[in-house]
Image 1 (tube, rainbow, N blue to C red):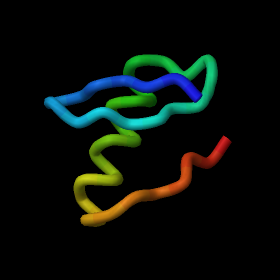
Image 2: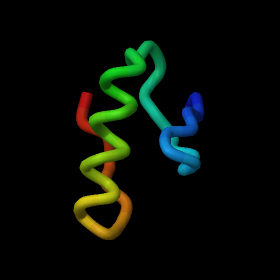
Image 3: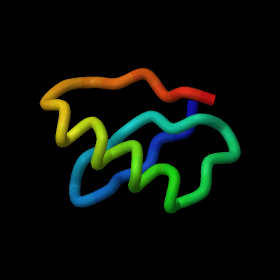
Image 4: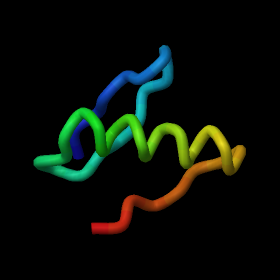
Length: 40
C-alpha cells in the first residue's frame, strides 16, 4: 500500500488515491485519535 506524509504523519493510502483523499484520511485518523481503515 502506498504511503503519503501529511503534516509530518506517514499514512497508508489506497492505491490510486488522490492527494486530497489522502489528506482527508489523515484528518479522520487525527480526529479519531487512532487508526482508521480506509474505505474504498
